Structures are given as structure tokens and as C-alpha cells.
Length: 311
Length: 251
Ligand SMILES: Nc1ncnc2c1ncn2[C@@H]1O[C@H](COP(=O)(O)OP(=O)(O)O)[C@@H](O)[C@H]1O
Ligand SMILES: [Mg+2]
Image 1 (tube, each protein chain N blue to C red):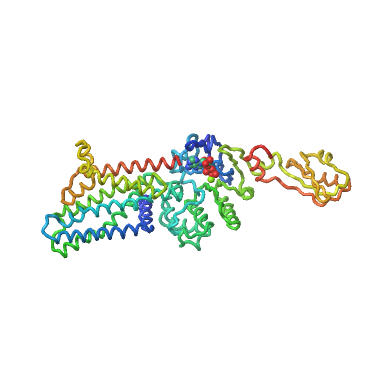
Image 2 (cartoon, chains in turn brown, cyan):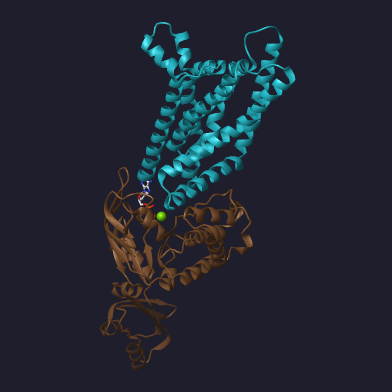
């Protein structure tokens, strides 16, 4: 659906993205992640034909975004960062206007505008002036606009930025529903969202792709994949060496707190040494008050990939 | 074509949505009313060769007011879209750059023509009341309006160009005001600087809208003027298109 080859964009003096290569297949929901200034919006603007790349190629549904941009635009619904809208127009008026620009006219326009208003729950504000709407509604107007021409592909630049937790949840549900019929590329900073909604993520940092895989694979491949926490009364006996020898354990840290010893283990995420740990503790007659596992999250991956090498 | 008309009607509407439109409208009504009033006063003071149309269009306050209306009409057309970011939604819809440029130009032109509508009435009323001809001939009457339309097209294209240059509306207004004033007063240069070369003087008066207007209102319609305004407008729109594209592509 999206194909990006050797894409580079230089602004006056700044190289915003450098030699990007990635692709998005039909039906995927792909999360496009990266810290601020990484080049996400730049990439999306090029994909939306808003501006041309300095070099390299990108295509949408097989149409080059520069040389065949009119066809490419027909296949794409794009929602820019911060959802710019005309504040002086009414919701229905705006959607009708956008529909005509997208060559949807007559009865089909009435149908489509009605459909997207329903889908994005805009019925109760359809006659309001956009300038008076809350951020959450504006976001939905932008989304409704992107959906008007039933595009195969949606590109959403930070669709949940600036929303409160309830609104974020609504938008997330909406996006997940849309994912049944559309291919989606979205950028966001809310990583738990991505783990819940995206089938694949592309992580970009300083204009270069750091990783592109499913969230699970990324988490599994991470060096400090998971952590296990054991809190026990160990008496004089400390078992650090023995714990370190359990299979799958990479590193053990130990601290004491009110007579309790707290072990923090780093493991690779495929093995779970909790059972072995439990047996070791009962053999040595430790009193255990907590034995728990913390899975690595996408957030850990993100931080590791975009902050540098230190963990 | 439907797309162009949609864009155009959006531009016209957004002109009328902004409070600036009504300020300009009131200012312009007041100004033309005043000029008309003083024109009538001038005529009624004694026998004169001049007609009301000449007296109206050839007065200094009218011209000063006239050049003041273009910056507020045109300053927002591109600047505002860049400022609000709506340029991104607009230009990622399947529309072409030149459609947008022409629609923005056309929208401002429509508003400009609406400004003039009431004045048509002045001269009709004058003829009814004074039982005298408003202009020396129908040609002078329509010629004046034709000139206004042509000059308006040129100045609006200058304004659009200035607006495409910056996302700051005030800056756009100042730029267009300066350029328009320059065009306008070009002819006066020969009064103030007697020792410039005759070629330059000719060029300056060729560009001087003020001089053209005097001739039009007397009924002298000169085809060179059409070439001047037509090519000037086309050139400014072309430049606007280039700047618009450049800003988007570099931005
Ligand atoms: N119009 C512009 N002119 C110059 N530099 C820009 C422009 N837009 C973005 N940049 C730079 O390009 C880089 C990538 O920006 P952007 O794509 O907006 O990142 P993101 O969306 O990931 O936060 C940043 O360093 C930013 O400063
Ligand atoms: Mg961004």
C-alpha cells in the first residue's frame, strides 16, 4: 500500500529524513514512532503529496506521490498534525466542501457526509461552527474528512495529541474499527496505544529508521527484555550467585529494605525462571512476599532505541 | 470546473465571514459617498466642462481611499492558510495549485466588484435627479468601470502575491500597499523629478494608473491599457503561483 524507497528530505540546512526505506502492506495498522523532530511529520507530508522529497521515491497504491499525485491522493485520507480546520465553517458545511473537492457530488455526497458523521459521532454537532468545538470534536471532524472518499489508506499524524484520556480511548476505538476496512499509518507518542492497536511499528530517530517489526518481536529482541522481582527475607544467607546461575537470567541486582531483600533480575523474555526461583527460595527457607514478572514494553524498546545505547 | 467553483465560493464566503470585510465595505461606502457629494457640490458651483463621472473618479481623496482598500481585501488569502495550517489539508485534497491561486484571486475580485455595486446606483440617481448626463458618453461611463475592473485585477494580483510571500497578514498588507502605491503614483514622478530621462518618464506614465483613469473617465479607451493590465495581472498571478509552490515545497 505504501512503498518508500531511499526517501530523503532536506530543509534549508537540516536533513529531516535520511534515506528511509519501509513499506506498509494492505490491511496493516502501522505505528510510526519517534521522538519529536525525528521526521515523522515530514515523511507523512511527503506521502500526502504536500511537498516533494529531495530525493528518493514513495508510492501509494502503486501511484508515485509526486508524478501521479492526483491518483495517489484519491487513495489516501490524510489528517495532518494538529488537525487544521477552517474555524468559520459549520461541520456539515465543511464536510460538504471537502467532499466536493474530493469529487464526491450529488446524492453520493449526501450519503458519504451522513456516513462519516455517523461513524465519527458528529451528529450532535453537525450545525456547530468548527471554531467553537472542543479539541476532541475537531479531531473527529478531521478524521471524518479523511474518511470522506472511502480511501484504502489512512495516514494520521498524531491523532490523539492533546486529548484527555476518555477522548483518547474514543479515538483509539474508532481507529481500531477503521482498521477492519482500511490500511492505517499513524504516528503517536502514546506507546501502550500502539501495542494495543498496531500490527507493526516503524521506529524512526533523527531521520533514520531504527527498527521495523511487530511490537512483540521488538520487545522480544530487546536486550533487557523483561524483569523479575523477588522480595524475600533471606536471613544471613544471600543467594545472588545461585540466582545468577538459573537459566535465562542475565543479571541480578540486590538491595535491602526493612530487612527484606529485593532481587531484580533481567532475563531474556522467552524463558521464565520464576518456577526455578520459587524452588530455590523454598529449598533455602526464605520467606517470600513478592515474586512477579514485569514484561518489557514497547516503551522500553522506544527509549532504548531513541536515547542511545545506555540502558 | 466544479472544484474551481467550490474553491471560489469558499473564498468569497470567507471574505464575507471576516469582520475586515465589513470595515472595508463601510469605509468604501463612506468614501464614495463623500466623493460623490463633493463632486456634485463642485458641479453645482458653476458651469464646468467636467461631468460628474470625471469629477468623481478624478479626485485625489478618492484615489487615496482606492489604494487603501486592496491590502485588507487580499492580505489574508494565502497568509491565513499558512498560519492556520489549513494549507496542508487544502493542498492534499486532489486540487491543483493553479486552481487554488485562481480561486483566491477570483474570490477577492468578486468581493471587490461587490464594493462597487452601490456606486452604479449613484450615477443612475444623479441622472434622474439632475436631468443631466452623468458622463460625456456611455463610453466614459463604462470605460471608467472597465478601468476600475482592470486596475482592480492588477492590484488584487499584487495583493495575492504579497500574501503568498508571508504568513504574517500585516507584512503582506504593507508589501502590497507599497507596491500598489508605486504603480499608482508612477506618473507623478515626472512632476517631481523634472530631469529624468524621457524613456523612463514614458515608462512611468505607462504604469501610472492615475493617468489612465483620467483618460478613461473622459471616454478615451486605449487598447495599450488593456495590454498593460492584462499582462501585469497574468505576470503577478504566475509569480504568485511560483511563490506559493516554492513556499510549500521548502516549508
Ligand atoms: N519547515 C521546516 N523548515 C525547516 N526545518 C524543518 C521544517 N519542518 C521540520 N523541520 C525540521 O525537520 C526535522 C523533522 O521534523 P518533523 O518531521 O516535524 O518531526 P516529527 O514530526 O517527528 O516531530 C526537525 O528537526 C525539524 O526541526
Ligand atoms: Mg510531527
